[in-house]
Length: 281
Length: 244
Image (tube, rainbow over all chains, first blue to last red; front, top):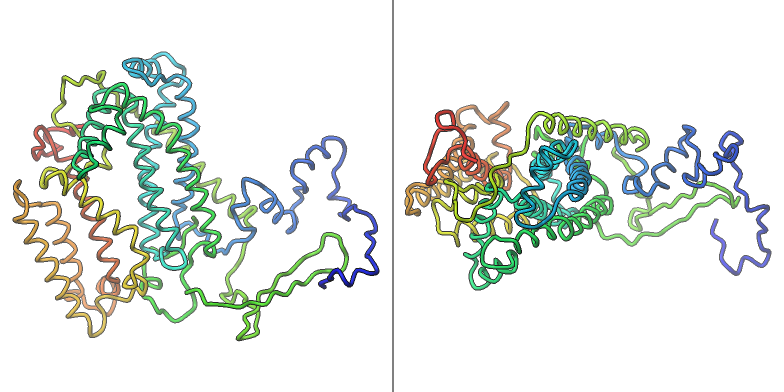
């Protein structure tokens, strides 16, 4: 019932500001109060608490409270978008650990690789996780794009989110590529030399662009420092914000794409494709 | 498509100012019916159903990555030496498709124009009306015309790939184009009524265009990674190994 200001001549007196909750839901004792100050609801399994645990949680609130059963089936999305994001999270974690040991200078960077391999406990493992994780992220993002395309999930109203996604994929490639130089071994040096020499082919601005990226005419200490800053600061910031935008748009564009079911097939791809539509993300 | 609505909002609220459900109903002015979910879909709460699936999937991913990282060491060659150029010098694997193209065309074409066009094509996919309908491309009366048209286009492309490069025929692109053309013609052999023939016949035009891009990129990448040796010569990996 809507109550405008004019109606409030006889004000409603709130009995008490205390919300009425079942006794089983009330916080118990001192630690119960601390717990409740953080989570604001009990974890007793009630429909209301199931909703609140998503709705009131900063880390989960990108999810809706309820999801269609069809939308969360593994075979629909293979969870590729979510797994790409999870891989990115792993890369940030392992990357921060690597930053504790790594010096972006020539030739110290290479010596740090040797230290990681032979001196630092778990050093090899952390570097391997970062390396293989990076390959996994490129592959997962690419597969995610394939899946979204073949599902037709790029169509209105999701066309802009497709564009965002393509850009996220390009940033992922740039992240992987800038990280490729950091070990400062023959593989990374010549891999980056081959790639950045290609930039010179861009008409008019190619030479300047290459100079800007490398801090010189060839791959050297300046290039290592610039790639380091791009890899560890600039590109991760852009990607993090971009992923936020991407996920936010999934929700704002009406949630994940689901092909119409139980209707007459208008678009045969939706109905008959072996890879059926809809993005988990 | 999004329908233009001028919705009325009706806020239904309990009179007791305590935790009580609030319901917001959006009503389509034309039909005067609330916009309800009529799909009959089964809805599950995110907690725990979706979260359990996510945690499971991520756990499996982490476990797999950890196992691989435990077993296989990341490559580390000698210290970078600008004076010593390895032969061949390869970019990371996801750029080897472009580097393979570099073997055939000048850098401006293979490194800038073609990848640029591919990215542009990706970005504009959703904005082309031709993509939105996703009508079957090889069904009904349009079957012959569409197939002939695509074959004409494909054969012309193969002709261009045969003669356009100073380094000889661009076999990777000829291969991907030919594979696609042969696949498109399969309904002639298999029939369009059922099975694989029907599946192929009901693919849309954007399906074929996108698949051509992906297939070409995949073939170029595989050749660049496994089949290129010193001087970018064609080698067989089972005879000489893989050049990094």
